[in-house]
Image 1 (cartoon, rainbow, N blue to C red):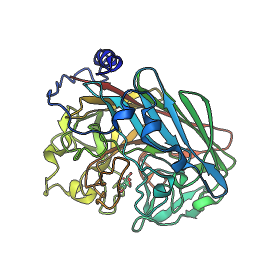
Image 2 (image 1 turned 30 degrees about the vertical axis):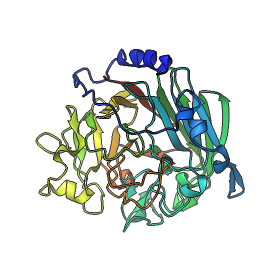
Image 3 (image 1 turned 135 degrees about the horizontal axis):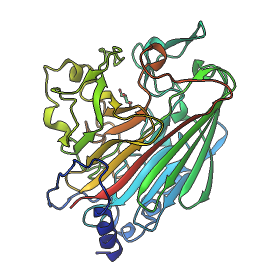
Length: 400
Ligand code: BGC
């Protein structure tokens, strides 16, 4: 075994848990998923050898797409394409030091444009999640968006920020800066919105995402990242045995079309109580729970505790086989926890595995869904002269 990974594993074990009350220790069963070809396992450039950069080189809407790799000296690397600003791979060592790709994704930029795409790894905007009936009103004027999810508008509309080519610059091995200018009226939204998203991979195996945006007209904005994680490794099967802890005492219940009712309901005594580490699947089959029925499982926004302008812990997730732990910190008030209820095995991922039902989960940090129509939710209005800023960190370590 590569000594560097053993050493890194020790460093990672020493990492401080963001949820001090989480003492969950993991089983020592050896993970059976092989996520990377052998040749790649010795190298921090595993992302590059695993993926063929050429398969991401294309011209879409007259703009060049490519694959960019961030790496550090601690066994981690992240591959991102500027098509939709999508995270394609996140490779981190597991509890045995084995490089493991914990992000689900495709091998080619073409597949990301195909009918099977479900926002895999994408930057989502101009407004993440749903806007009821694709309508909202700003200063007395009603705006109409395309409806692309039943009666509602989802993730920015027909061609949201996940389906555009971002301008990319990579100043160094650990940073990728992406910029996209969305025209006034694009997808029905008012104002020219200039968004900049910076991905940084730290020496501590933390991926930091800094979002910024400015507008020339009053508009609404709610950016997020839609990476599908499987902490046992892409293609290793169900995520229902992952342990999840969420820093939320309340969540926003939804109607049958996944639009929030406007209430903030306590999680206590419900399957939405993740205040202590709990296996995702332990309460999932509660057919009697109307909220799980509405979401087809977890597909809900959690109201994060201690939300304020500073970074606060949103979640901690542990892969039951790999021992890989992901801590999520954010400046956002909410987090959509989605567990791949609509995954249906129609697509093949990088590893060759199918996107089977509930084999990945998302933790989309954001303002609450349908915010423009919900007067009790924190506002997502952005005015000219003001700057939208948001930060989310996905930090990886291991538990043995
Ligand atoms: C939504 C799900 C949707 C998924 C698409 C999530 O953010 O809440 O309802 O199916 O994105 O990938």
